[in-house]
Length: 157
Image 1 (cartoon, rainbow, N blue to C red):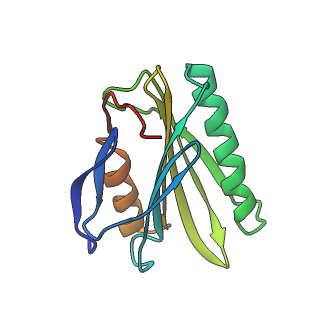
Image 2 (image 1 turned 120 degrees about the vertical axis):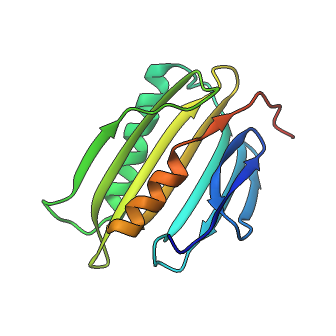
Image 3 (image 1 turned 90 degrees about the vertical axis):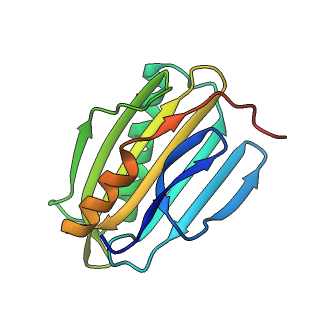
């Protein structure tokens, strides 16, 4: 792996992320951290923390389906695009769901690895790693999307 990952805490979320600092955006309903890679093994990584009422397993699965459709919309039209729903084990989460979406963007094979989770109380979390669909990219997305931890937190207003 070329991009070095370090354990990173972003408000209530801890995960392995690139060692270079992310861009941070604060909005009325949440926060977003984003890393933009060089495309070697990471195209982008985003972590969103949102106030939410979708705090059940059904709400998390429903939002994951929405995220998958958004990713598919951004891919080149192709019958070879594939979606795989995965088990998601997020420490400290009340409910979690994950999926990978393989396809092409601008003619380049890519993989989107999505994790949607909730603390069951007030927040929903969306982690999206977009990587080249090759060995290094799959290694990167796996490293980022496993070992996610959620902690109790009150979102600043």
